[in-house]
Length: 617
Picture 1 (cartoon, helix red, strand yellow):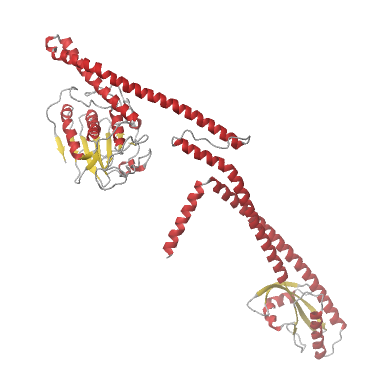
Picture 2 (cartoon, helix red, strand yellow; picture 1 turned 90 degrees about the horizontal axis):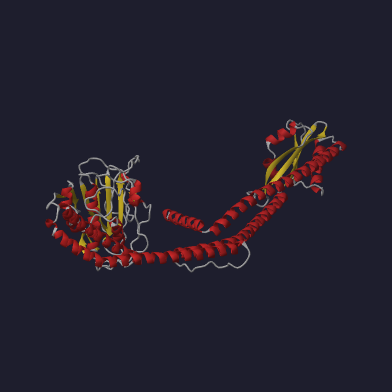
């Protein structure tokens, strides 16, 4: 039960804190109420203390004066009375207490006449209320009274109620001494109740408390009203800004009429929104013209390019009849036409992504089989570069719904790039799977990448060093297209690099449409197989930019959710790989790194031996 109450309390506290943090108006009101409460509490404490001190000080001064007057009256009465026997003295004492009790001008509650210790008179003490004698008159009080001689002694006491002794009311007792007879000295005590003053003070406290709550409520209403008048336009502006961010460019902020600051804010905001809408419209028109231009030019170039290829192939077939320079030129001409065709195909593919016309032809395939096929295709290049390629397959099923053509294009780019930059060191391809996703990591131990290069590796036409010699050429669009292909599958493509320690690329795909990826089933930079060192990490996350043009159809028949998988935002801890982190090292400039796409055709870009050493673990 206690645990449940604690859980409910924690949840309520968290909801309250979340509500407080999300509402500017609530923060303003609560802050004003907190400050007002502190001010009212300080002021109330000061007023209460001042009133209490004033009431009690005035009352004690009046008691002191009254007690002194009564003592003088009793002393004169004793001086004017002649007592010759103990009986006369006893009668005098009784008459004195009776007279004091009957005196209408006295505010004392009770009176006590006590013979001083050591007195010889054979008379009894006279008290108006015997049950209070031992309660209010203590030995310490009597000693102090006797020692004070002519001065009065005041002491605060608690007076039990007559009807209920457990109830104690505040009071004060005043003591002095009088000479009742030549050989008889007596102590006289006056008991005063402070209950009226206590009731007055309680009433003042109640009034102050009610006034404080009233002022606090008034302060809350005033603050809420002012905050609402101030925050409401800001809230409307925030709502309109969110709508604008969602693409509703026709949204405008109301309340632009008027001459106050809020109307000026509304007018300025609407002018900004109109300017933003105009700029975005012009940029969209320009972007559409650019995409249309690229698409039209690419399509228009296909016909003359086909004619040029046919002519170049005829020239290339007749190169044996030419001299050495013309023969070499024919070979170069055909090679450059291949690259031109590859670039043209890449431009057409990019234009499809930009136009949102890219579609998936998804089917259920095993990712491990596709990886083995890609590695076998890259075997001649790997043997030419003297690079050993190893593949590690998972024990479980790595099947998923994806477009084989697009995923093969991604894997071919990653594997060929790794071979190109491995510098005769091993290249490791790791396939992993989980309940929600399948992944491939392509790892090389070549020149690596700096942190800045990792951040730009997926940019279009970007190269770390355009002058770096390559075997397979490339258009500079390969990794950009690979990233778009991954986003089209609602997947992700991540990069890692370290200068001199190699680079790693990870492709993660959901097993089926509607499945959120979550944590990838394999780390970005696994430990080296044979090199012995665990690499440090410079992670880079490349989320999808905008909506995915299409969605993988649900081929599993299991009724998965139609919701889109969540996309990784920049800076998510998913790729932090803490188990691989090491102290940050100085990153020297990396000369000559080109991670642009290799030639997808790969048929005329250098000689290829027939086989390559494949290690499957």
